[in-house]
Image (cartoon, rainbow, N blue to C red; front, side, top):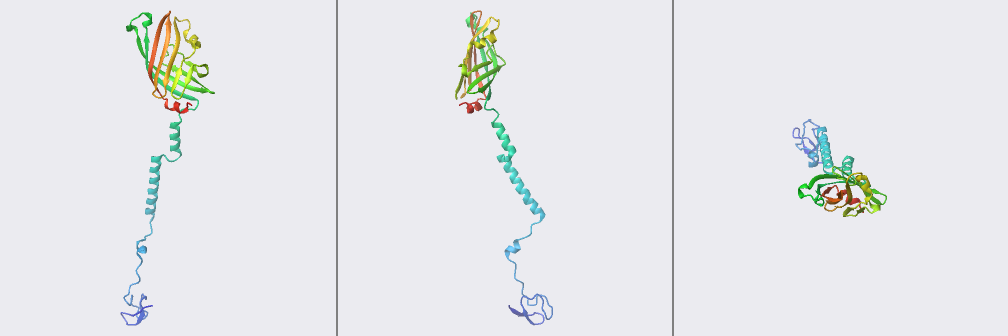
Length: 228
């Protein structure tokens, strides 16, 4: 322990003494106490405002990450719902285009030919190991609606094409007592390009009439994933 004289009374005392034991002078030797370390000087207790600000910053970062990456159950359910709208047994899609009726077989000129817009709604349903294709339309034009069954040979479904050529059992449903008699309905849908084409052949009092359907189909992406 170092000793030194008091600057007031001259008594020999420790340099660590804060007051002189003889005369009571403060800091009698003029020596300052050892300085605090820089680490001690830099540390300051954090108040409640600083703590709350830090917590708020952490919450803001987590909320931003949830919005960017759809974290949490709500985001997961939303993504799952948007990608599984079609079940594994029913596949719905639509086809739109023009139905061109040709009356040339009746001896009429091209001025009698007509064009109509059609919108078909299809449901490809899987039943056991086979597919059934059902149709509703704003312009059926005497086409069959519950038409194609794969197990009867009416329907061929592959990973690239849907082809249909229903047998004549449907003719009784649409013909009735009319003079207009449907003969055949054949067509195909490309699952790659979406192109749709079909032909309905009819006879009116023995004269042939054909209707050509051409257009595009929509909603085929999901169907391709399930057709094996």
